[in-house]
Length: 467
Image 1 (cartoon, rainbow, N blue to C red):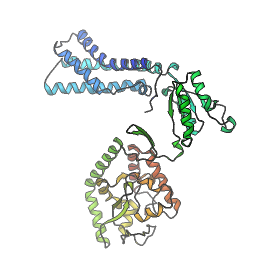
Image 2 (cartoon, rainbow, N blue to C red):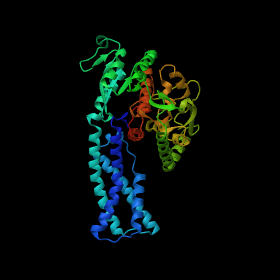
Image 3 (cartoon, helix red, strand yellow):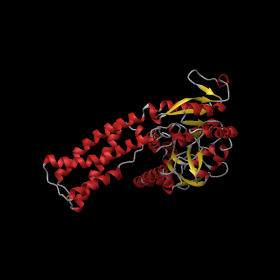
Image 4 (cartoon, one colour):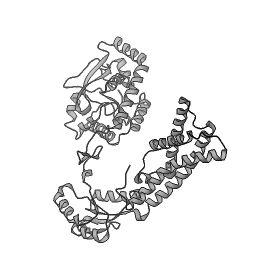
């Protein structure tokens, strides 16, 4: 979620956030006493304060911390629903604890009346406070004035995003560049305030709050000189590296021992993202192997008794980070090639056995790779692994070919569900596969994996490219 860099009236915003955080607990406490008073229901004098304390603690622990920036990205109705969900969890926890310990701090009737009344009051209060908070934060007085040092694609893109997203509370006020307007090709909507040498004086005169320096990395000396000129101002200064001229994959900024770095080509499976993908792989592969075991034995018997040779064909392929792995398949050919030269399967290939033709057509020959997935050498979804001989051939012909190995290879992939299967008779065929594989790395999400799995199952018996 994108956060504002810093609001002008940060003290007022902090107070608003504190009020919103306290309202939920206050509403729970007040509604308890109001309910007991008007319903004339009995309460335990010693138990009620304890119940109140538990409610407050639960709300504080369960309630997701909200800062001013994140509040701007949530609609009031969404904020109300989020608070209500956390409150329901707190109520259920209290109820279960009471049943398990046989401690009844208040009567059950009072407890459930209190829970219902608090739910309604929390919804209304959250709607009101969230609406007021957003209007206050998005007021013109909250905006910080922004200028850009350097007119280029990256500064134009950033300025456009500031304009489209008012929740950032940053108002673009023009560009500074040493090139003339004619040379820059400015349109009528773009305002050039002056040269880079005039930037410092403009910032001081016009109370500019934020400066984005978007000069190319090769102009490091100019960047250093500009920073020296701006030391006499109080503006916040950010350097926007022109890294987006590169073909970035999973770009993100981070720091190493306090040193900021920008990832330009990285795996998407880090942190909880990697854990979620691995859990999906383990659960689906384990359940599939158990559930399909009778069917797998039937296929194995069919392969064994219809043609000479092993049931399982093992072939060396490249896995994560280009490491060599052994990939399992039901043997579908009369040969088991795994040398320096491997001929790809083609239509009407004489090497394909009768049973093997059916297995390849339906992709059932790939099922033993569920074992590879369970081992962690492969994933359910990812770039399809190619034979080592083919990898060594295409890595020399296709730029960026080996980037696809930043993630574990998959039984199925984005390229396969987009029709890139079968023999690659032309270089363009493999280039199309690699293009889809890189797109998968760039846009990966767990939902994308689920989508590819379902698309694969749907196309299993209908893919004319499978042979």
